[in-house]
Length: 157
Image (cartoon, rainbow, N blue to C red; front, side):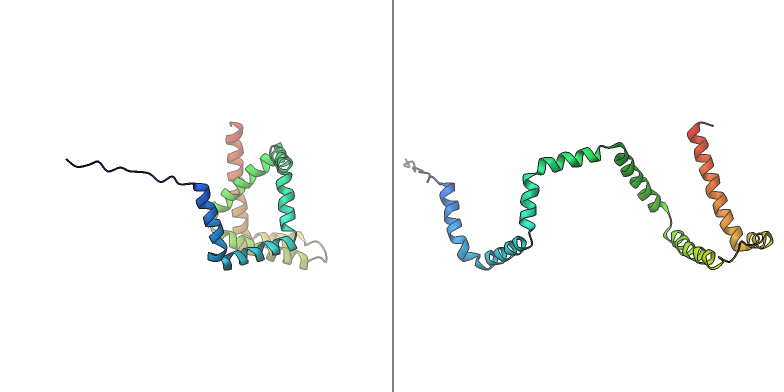
């Protein structure tokens, strides 16, 4: 019959192993440690470490202030409005928005160029009759129609 093999486990001291690794680290990683020392010195010279230390020591105050500010009704509405605006901008065709973005400065430049006196009623009617003006009015009328429809739905009409 075979004789049993005795197993004797070697007790490992994890703390001792970590200390050994720590003693060997400077030799193995000298270049990386020097780079980190340079980085730390640069952060210290520029006051970044002091600022971070101050932020950490007053973190409860900063957190309380941020939460208090974020819970204000006007800030909650502002965040909701930003979300809605991002959805709106995401739904607009970039080419259409590009046309609008180009037309605004052009229209403002035309208005600024004619500062001499108010245009006559006849010249305004002539402008209103131009194909470009009618296209713009059709766009504005469509927007107003859609806005009125949404307002009516909201009011339950």
